Amino acid sequence: MTEKSPADNFPTGYEPSKVWTWEKGNGGAFASINRPIAGPTHEKVLPIGKHPLQLYSLGTPNGIKVTIMLEELLAAGHSQAEYDAWLIRIGDGDQFGSGFVEVNPNSKIPALMDHAPKGGGEPVRIFESASILVYLAEKFGAFLPTDLRARTETFNWLFWQMGSAPFLGGGFGHFYAYAPMKIKYAIDRYAMEVKRQLDVLDRHLADNQYVAGGEYTIADMAIWPWYGSLAQGKQYGDAGTFLDVETYKNVQRWTAEIAARPAVKRGRMVNRTSGDPSEQLHERHDASDFQTKTQDKIGEA
Image 1 (cartoon, rainbow, N blue to C red):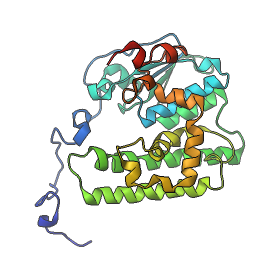
Image 2: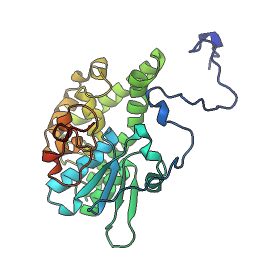
Image 3: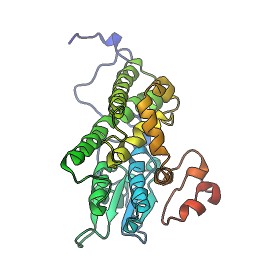
Image 4: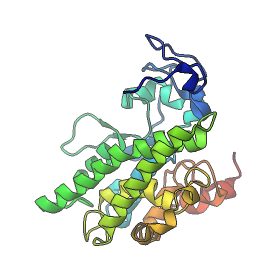
């Protein structure tokens, strides 16, 4: 590797120290919630509603995966998938409350508690969005094929999304939309990778209705909130134009088909705190909340 002079670094003259130390305030738009240690910062008991499934989340792509799944389960007739969705405001540090950390020691949304697990016994905690999707699919026997090949293909794409999204969100999204300065090298590096991922998905969807083949699965539910919303131009400001997402015709076809599903429309609304108030349902405790408790109706900030 060719050594570069510190004068060529950005910012000019920067050289990594021998041992990294945290400078509070690093992190751009999310500086107030980033820190290099785990554990709770304050005592806060999590609320528990009337349903066995208690979701603690926010309407980010990872959170939307789970609310789509829950709404799809209900639409498919699984009445035991009724749930309470509690809003975790990460900007306020809710994810560092003691109760949340007990459910997810990694302090990231979404997190789920099942107070009526299969076989009975103590409540089960589930964290990481893919783990929650698999748990719910197996609990209700839905949206996860039982055939070996189809099941494996579903897992292939589910874990493709889990491995790819950090390039889209933590990489491209951060440096394109949230970093305190525009760094050409960083944006170019991650834009290249995101476009490669879009091409992977586009080529695959040329021959498949859904990502695991001909059946709608948890893999679609995991990928759509990230790459579908990007294809719709709803991520990171004008990133869709920057990445020329309209050229990925198969992704666009798949995106539109998923977006038209009523359960997906509802899932996108739950724990959402930005955008059109009529599409924000900060907390969801009953199916009727979609008609009576969206932000345009209750007028709360």
